[in-house]
View 1 (cartoon, protein in one colour):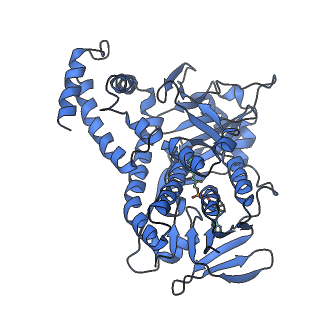
View 2 (cartoon, rainbow, N blue to C red):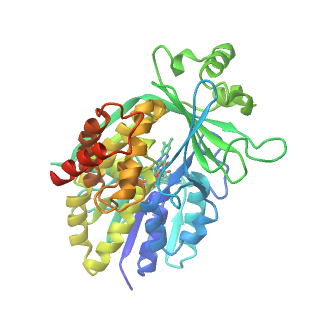
View 3 (cartoon, rainbow, N blue to C red):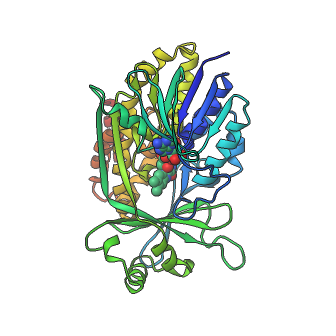
Length: 448
Ligand SMILES: Cc1cc2nc3c(=O)[nH]c(=O)nc-3n(C[C@H](O)[C@H](O)[C@H](O)COP(=O)(O)OP(=O)(O)OC[C@H]3O[C@@H](n4cnc5c(N)ncnc54)[C@H](O)[C@@H]3O)c2cc1C
């Protein structure tokens, strides 16, 4: 019989990783702090939907479950920008056949658990909260919420997939040479809803991710299978326009009518949602090393939580799974070597996407409404068409490719230099498909 493996956390990454390991024949125990979400209603404020893209799909495909997930995912082909007057501008995310997919976090998590549990060698244990890792013998200490008792579990390998506030990482933080940083954005988020219309249809185009960019803040909306949209308001906690200023009904309505006028009639429960749903915070977590004594490995948000503006948190966690799975083939399941290698190479990519995600926040809330930014996007798409082997827009590298995040980050910086030159060409706004643009591009390419 193959080794016993424990996974702490039955979230998106823990559940998917359980499936990939089950297919290799290991004995897997997954310990989850919360009750089984398939049996209990965890309530509002947690029905965030996520954008699933190429890196995530690859891991699902490796697990042989991509078709199951396709059934609960909706394609979004581009961004639909809403200006303050209610005018709409559509911007495709990639080439014609490319899309990112909206999927409910709760539904996806439930499906992944079902699929994991269909393997005889996977067992889930709910209401079992990881307290710590004993860093001497690598045993896992749990608190059993049902029986109100402490438990100790041992295994050959332990994976910490217990999210941004990982108890396993917390134990490792106390060991020598463990580096850790955590930084909060001054913005928080709140979930709101646009229900289906009275005739049972989508209230907005459902093949788009809707954005109301407003400089320091923004509202976004992603479609759900039940024809509703889950909206997320990203807003500073404090300041002129902020959560702290929106307490009374009048203040909330004034704010929404000023900035999101076209959305207000579509949100009949705006006031209730706004007051009932929590203001949640957004954190970036970086740490290193991710492995301990070649027995414990952190993955997903536990080792690299990022802000959600590139839609890559889950995707990068799923990519952890596909990379580890590939390494398992490459190193014949020699996990000690895999842990060391993964912990050496992967954090650089995680840091790359963390920085790109912060940068994309500025793009989404601010620049997507800027004509020069839109022009840059158009020129980038044109260059991609003309030179598919030499140029790929940054968004496509991150979302529709498997290029290392770190390399995408480096190339993105180089593309900034290119577009600084292109956008400085006189009269570029009126004439951008011209020889001068090609000349500047060729020069940039030859200097690469
Ligand atoms: C507003 C918002 C929007 C987002 N949008 C996107 C998006 O569009 N695309 C994308 O790719 N990502 C997105 N993300 C990020 C994504 O949600 C996370 O990256 C993803 O959920 C990480 O998965 P995980 O399994 O590592 O962690 P989690 O999903 O947090 O799962 C961790 C699990 O561990 C459990 N746990 C925690 N502590 C313990 C403990 N002590 N003992 C046992 N169990 C424990 C938790 O209950 C949970 O089940 C978004 C995040 C936010 C906040």
